[in-house]
Image (cartoon, rainbow, N blue to C red):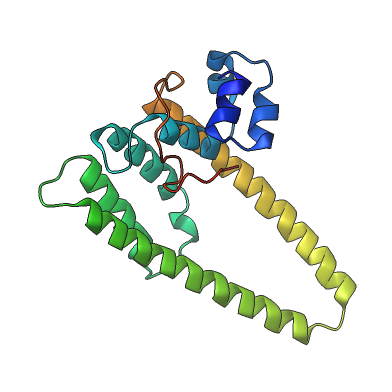
Length: 186
């Protein structure tokens, strides 16, 4: 993955810097950022909704399953979105890309609602706490734990992506890719 190619594809500066002068094989083998790897696969696996994207969708679903442990008990929309996308990617009769998108939008709505609820809980806690220094220390510890958990999840995702793509992806960039709207990821 020469840096010129990553820059041309619109990779984030952090990814370009990390790759440096590594060969494509070395970068692929040692990368601990599954999000970067999925982004690259998305850029080089064909147009969204096309047959070339099905392996990418399966890899992304496998990575998404890592986050299900954080979903509120009883909330089924994220799992339904993953299962719908997997069914489409496996060619299950009657499953359309429109159904995948509908399920994904529902899962996103669930995630957004959960994030706002968590924020409201945090705000209530902050209002009830007079010891701002203790609260700041707690937040710093939580952020460190969140960062460690994120790094661990991204590393697991990188291993998953390598399971689907043992070698770095090759191909021509799509007009859209990565996260579906052409935006940089990273």
